[in-house]
Image (cartoon, rainbow, N blue to C red; front, side, top):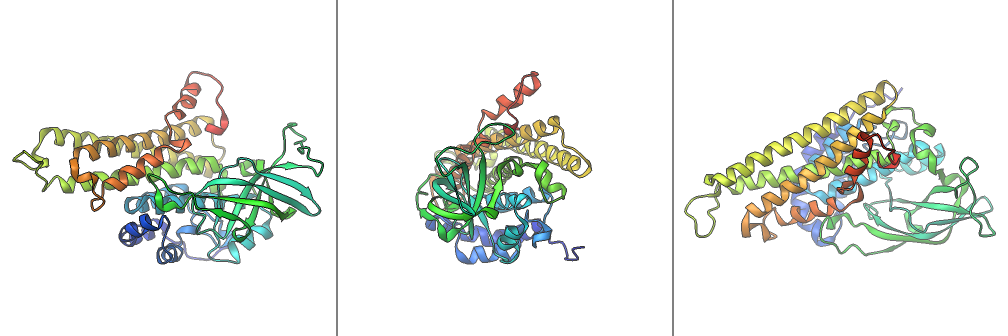
Length: 393
């Protein structure tokens, strides 16, 4: 039995927030997390939140995890995004060869895995393994990573795709490689989430031993090696919980900053401070209510599905409800930040104030696939009795 004392990751995130907030200008300028902040994040065990206890991680509940991400996002969204992305990537360890998982996460206390979405990844069968080639973009947190994953279609030596015997479809595998084997292309010149350093990486005919290949279907709960209820969640579901946590943190920090500004700012041509304006009062009332409601719904849905994971099987209705709470929270957070940004007037356009960066960041969050309005279509199909793409739920 693991006798280690449980780390309070939420409290650690909250305690580290002032340092993260102070580092925000450096994060923006460097388009990445500074080394001293990375050291502090490791010391606070925030890179280890979803790593299994068997591998030296914290294996905290998804509820605690999103609370920690939300706390970090109040200080800086890019930092929260990097921690969130690499934390979820670490859960692939539940399906890895145990020796490989130990090499990545247990032997190196600062081991971090990152990846970008699959595109043209190709793994050609070779003696004892595969030859991997391809390009993977949007690798958030890859600048702090020690390992990178490559999602690939498997090809035989003759160039024909290997077929999955159960479906007949081309076989897919996720292969893990040391970061130094990759060619990294700095492409991250973007409007928001600048500090995530979500670069593009590539491999060119790099050999990967067979034991470092993870069966693609094994990313789903049915084939997991880790038995804890955390690992009943799919990677898609955990990513889907991370984004609204970042969005809620941005919205809360932006709304709080506006309430502070409203105490003292007198708009040009007016004689009263913002807080005395009836329209502003109503806007703040609506924004506070919307944020509280969206956050409560999200956490309620997450809590419900977490309890189900602990006691038994997660139902489709619970998965849909979590997706509803996630997309609703992100959409509401974006609308709140937009309202507050406009209400702040010209003050909001200056880098010295806390509005313009958060305005850019929330719009970068909302551009991500799991944050877009189209997710509501899958939710609506479920309630209308129509088939739903299970990957979207």
